[in-house]
Image 1 (cartoon, chains in turn purple, cyan):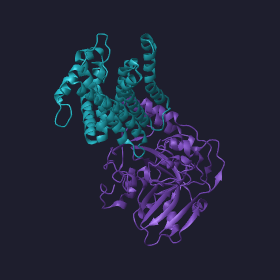
Image 2 (image 1 turned 90 degrees about the vertical axis):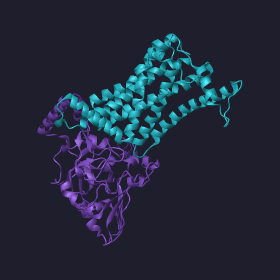
Image 3 (image 1 turned 30 degrees about the vertical axis):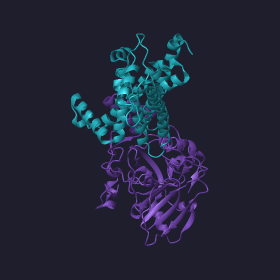
Image 4 (image 1 turned 45 degrees about the vertical axis):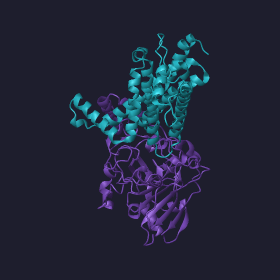
Length: 319
Length: 263
């Protein structure tokens, strides 16, 4: 991974004029329609603040699968996080993850692989071509963002691990360190946080391991140093700060599924027709908006690419 | 204890201004972009939190008055109760406008009447479909008659006892509000449970007073009408409670929710 000093102005801080004017027009339309849209507009404009100095990633390829929607700002993506290891409030991760030690970092590769071993992060990243993947991110709570992740396809790593013929699932485990993570000291979830994918989901080209955001190294509160991103599933599937990847014959259980199996299924595909037992999933609020007026798309809008994975499956039962 | 003038001229306006501060802050932060990346979430949670806090404060007045012996406390009860209604109302309106109204398909709506009807349908449908919304709505809805009958004139018109009985709906509102919060969180129930504990303690005071009142009744009766279970009969209870009813004094002093020794 190449690291250099940041440039004075990051490309992420520059909004080209056309986009800016589009945004203004949209805001003005919102004001006209609702009379209260000024609130949303104000939030959009003022939240655009420069990032703290982080380390720049180099040689990043653009990706054809990136959305053309305007990404959320660095400020929004790094101050509004569900990262329960640091607390249940959205701002807790930004507050308490600062001291998370992400170097040295290693990941245990276990289970149905040719040679189980502990890999240093440097070895995981060695020789990877990093790509920018601008993905929609839909939280199970009913809000969404657009995030310019930097990462590489998970399939490349799994191929290197040489899964055995028995491997059908992948299980991921997050760091769970009570010394560094105040949320782990509380017991509202059973730690460590785990998540799982079917092997074919993990091998799908849209599934990535992210190590950066806006051309910079992933901030701690967003799951540094390495996290999963599965854009067609609810955000909680995209596990953060991964310390173990295990290939399994049996379907693993995710942390939320273990906590409330009637509310959070193994698949957790974004699906506007299957409500959370307590709230609707039909619509979402695109942050930093004020209105829950955006129709949620099946598979978060990635249906063309991923619906084949679920052909013939009852998605109401396999929610 | 503060004098009546001090209470009326200084303390009450101070409490009033303080109680408006959270709403003022939310409005200021929303207009200046000082909320989080999710302003809708902030406004929804902020107004809900404060509704629950004012419900607890309102419920705490009578225990405070009886435990401390400071009768002036009662003068804040109406204001605090109305602020609970105010924040509950803002919370409900946030949901109606930013969640429900925003979700309507405006391509099919060409008149305010149709919009109103569609809004009523989506709100009532949601209340019917989702227990957690239904419980929250109950917490707010039961406060409507209480707010309407909160004036001194209404107390006089209803009569102290009937007014008191009606205003025990506050207990329902508090329990429903705490349940609504508990039902909403995804994992960490510590905060809703804390509210629940506070409300349970404040309600336990009432239960305790009701019990000791019942005991007093039994011992006071010359010929106690004891049922086979050893409990005072319904008839004797009714007789006692009738004697306990008080008319509102002309000075407009609010009746207190429980005061067994007043008769």
